[in-house]
Length: 74
Image (cartoon, rainbow, N blue to C red; front, side, top):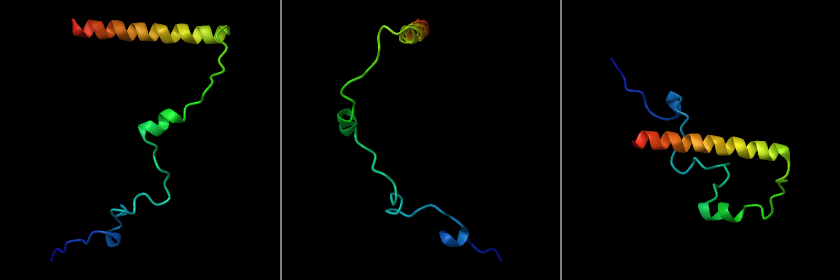
């Protein structure tokens, strides 16, 4: 009366089998490879008003995070 469904293509299961999942995909670089791919020079104008605004905003968020972290510990 009740039949079990077979796994694989007959049931519409589109999961790749072991060994088939990486076809056509790029290799993910390791941590060591990522460190070596950093640009050597950053061209950021530290006197630019927009850079200063961004730095203040980042510092403000960091201080809020640190304060929240301290409040949770106590």
